[in-house]
Length: 579
Ligand SMILES: [Zn+2]
Image (cartoon, rainbow, N blue to C red):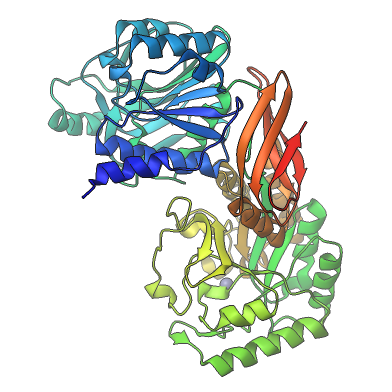
């Protein structure tokens, strides 16, 4: 019988990989423990795949790294702890030559204390043997590409203290972009968990960067175990830091297959308040809007506004429910309606859309998240393929499960095939809890606040979009019509303009949900299988099929890094693209 360790190493080495000199080289050492393999398998590889980074995996257990392998890659990622201590002289020499020729290095093994003197000398760092422990980071006040989604000095905390290797001295050319914070509380914990530690509270380097000859190095002192749910997990504020470390360090130009920065404005519970003037305004400001309507509530003039915006490609109207407590296939909070009742409700919906000359979108946004299993076949009859949110058919909201959707098992940011039916895709990109709605608690609606807190609304709206983009998903601004209705027309326009201005630096592509959904499906059914770069020319090979135009992200520049989106187009049965 194979051990879990052997099985996980097999899973790692069987991960789909990319060829060509435009790829990254992910180093692992299968002689290290099961825990380290878990970090690679659950923490690092899914993130690389999600961000569309072309990579190959190299197990150092077989043989030392060759210089030619490093020179044939844009960046080397040391993907787990307890690896550098076993580096041979040849491996270190290969990394050194790589850096001299511009191949980047991202080292997630902060345990340099146990590394050889050659590696210490190459990096110019000396460490204490005893590690620190911390449950909080502070990102630098000074801007850097790696922390571009963070506010200056922003903090992040996680569940329980995690290893932070103690860099006591670093050469001057290092710049710290994130620091571990040790306060009294962490000190008390640390004294119980690790020996010989009694340092003064303060800040200690967690992630640092430097240029080395033509190459760039990102050194993590914080353990990459941060990406396992025991500590923090994915889509909780560190994904952009690892992705950013890689994009920054990698030799340019660098081509990868990330999601473009799509941004959608989703509005639930739409009954036609203020004759949908607020929707008109959002479209005028430049947002692509996804209003989801109560078909028994919305009336005449509002429908005209919705239709016009739909014809102009500025809005996409979906059926949210009949009314607040009348869902399409589910008895609110109880269970699914009978098959015939579901069919009758869908027929009513179909007629409603036809009579009002509205197009039925492919993406469903069910009110309350509750749907009946029998809705799936009715949906498909209407040409729909995608459902927002993770609630499984026939489950009441209170009994909903986390079925660990891909890529990470997060139910806030994910895309995966519906467990009941692979012809249907589920997806979401949102923050957890009350922050899912950017107006929640910040308006006079239902007495939530004694005034509309405009500044806080702008901040939360900006954060919502930035959140999705930082996690490599689409940005979604989300609220409910009831809350918009209590904001004056002037304030509403000002709020949306301010949010739009705040996200401008991320080069947003405003898009409707169906466009985003088609892109998600295309990403799920295709893959970048090789990238070659000669000078500034590139050749990318894809496998699979797509439903829509695809984009490649091209990173250029040395200190000032620019990200451009190159249209690859739509393809069937593989494609080669050059630029
Ligand atoms: Zn709703």
